[in-house]
Image 1: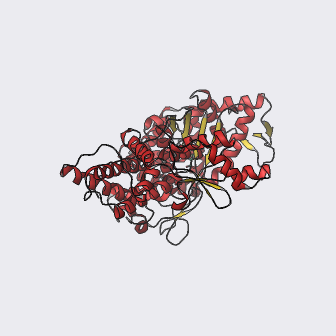
Image 2: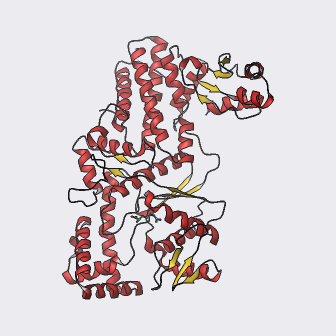
Image 3: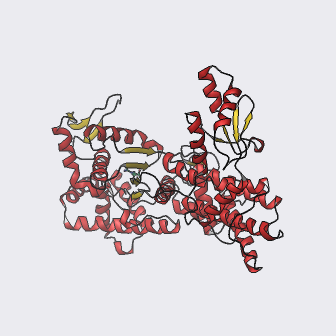
Length: 544
Ligand code: ARG
């Protein structure tokens, strides 16, 4: 499919010799794209910019695509795409099963680490964000033709299992009747018990040793706790229309057998050193070392993540690693990446990107928590949104609120505002899609045929077509920069352009070729809205 922006860039660059850095025009009277290339060249050559612009315009060959180029102000070059070209591109979007999303020129194997909740604990708002953002990355990168391997790095190993198993045994708890909230309640009882009783704490410690040694009864109970938790996580994933399945699970315990190997490897090559009984890697410029093995001989979170990198690069063949985890863990990942580079587990040919995100705040502007001050569970949040709207709309509201501003920013969970069908919200985009669908249904019922976009006489029509031609580049930019808000902003602009188009251009009431072309334009827009929403993990209902 023809990518207009890259075609325009290439033709200008052929003459200018440098990247014209085309930008969408800021006002309709400046055409569709603008370039400051003449100003930059003039500066270097010490010539008047408008003269340079005139020279360029005389030589640039774009007659087949653009109206005659214009020079504006101090020497900007304005490009206006011919309406028949825009019509052709809109028709291509309509005909293309991928709605204009181009395939990546260099397909990669991308591991995306996201969601990653902890066993015997319900997912909280932090996991909500990780899950929604990671799901969006998986969808976008897959659509571009990359091989995406999601990794759900659940917390299924660690000292907490000692107290959990001891508590189960003491209470003679029937695990077959346990669900995830029940497991979380068990966690809290065990925790209280641990703080109150030295004797219980001792037993819990011994139980950890038994678990590590592979004691059958202990392992059995540990596995059951994982099963109970997974059932709860999977319910939430299904409820949220998240792509993760059990095939994507790679919990911390997956790496148990590798931990000693990693420690040995780092120590024998002199990368890690014993310091105060612990095995540590001192990283230049970092005040705290990376602890590979603690003084008691235990391996922790850092060593596990190093083993995971080794596996992801060495065995899964990843050449891009993405981690979607709350910003407080940024230092941990920076350190892990540095150590992995030092050790050669992460060669220079493989990128590692930490994508942090801000907190979800309550209406009071404070960190979101329940009245009792405990962390809000993800399910209660979904319930709150569903009190305001139907499930698919409530979900759209939450996901869009999560993805539509810079990920680093905190955002306020305001269910009422998020579900509004006006303003920059998920439901507004769903509504725009449903409205386009409504027109098409009517046209079908009235027997109006359409196939292609052929005439675009009105500026409002041209604006819609111009935006449609940009969809592919927006998706590519999201795949590269991992900034979903760009796609949200684009879809919002498209929905806005569509409603201006309805206002200014009658569709069903027009006639002949104009009507069929307008219907085709509606259909192409509907397609891009649906495809774009799908990349955000949002359903596009046919009716609302
Ligand atoms: N389970 C961790 C938590 O809830 C997140 C794990 C993130 N991924 C990783 N590879 N460390 O905080």
